[in-house]
Length: 208
Length: 208
Image (cartoon, rainbow over all chains, first blue to last red; front, side, top):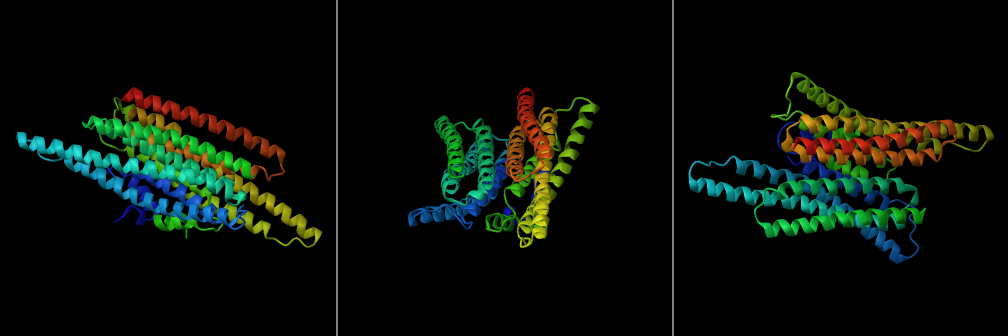
């Protein structure tokens, strides 16, 4: 069963269990999914601060994109766990003969790469939502400012949590060109997230 | 139905809807509940770094306390929404006669105070879990370091998100002695959380 179809109390049990998945990668995606949903809520509240039809369209677009991002992050909860299960399965491959050892090493590298891609995706879509928060903060109903702030906290935690998972996986990867490219991208994502968070908070202050 | 009994996808829909609850307060409790569950998971993994029976006991205690905190935060998701529903209901009370106005004002103040207590509780228990993270980081299986870091991110987001909700509610409260006491406590909780996060990360580095 998909993680997002579990009842929340059963999801808590799944995170608590000592099974390898779900773990921090899925938890990061979950945090971002709730954060993006809060932004979608604020963007859909009555009494927005829109002044023009263009404002109204921008806010409606922000809302539908936040809903899509939240759905994507809910799907990434499963993607992350499946990718990590692939790593565990690769480590369990036989390693008696030289051929087996070589095949196992190749499988581990491939599985690790998939397990790296999932949290990179989480980081990218959390950043998209953080950028949308600036629009929601400026045009949404100002009485929901605290919900925008909580949304930003959860999206930031999701992005940084996914970043921790990317970093740990990179230490096992041998393709240094790939490792270098992902390190560069994730550093940029973290800096952009920090800037986007500050811009959204400034927009909230201006709108209040 | 309790929020924690909803399927995760239905919970996302509930956060996205323009109904007043659940909002940022419940989302903050949710984030902390997942964070504490991740710490419980790490504390229960095989191959911990315990060296003495006392270490083993400390880690087992940390695990059971993280489970209890996670359950408490799941219950606080509902508590926060119920308290906020109480505020909305108080604002809808009749205000035609002077008696009605006075009764309504008193009910709003009482409801606002309950709606402030719920996120203060969320902050307190998130901080308890952040302190336990130092034990889990030092004594748990070091291969799950990234899960401890994600747990800290989610607990920090939950604590700060709850803090935003406390702050917004305090602006409507008239009892200045209460407002002052809560402001002082929440500032301390935020500083202690920041210090506790850093101490847990240091323990992770020392253990790796």
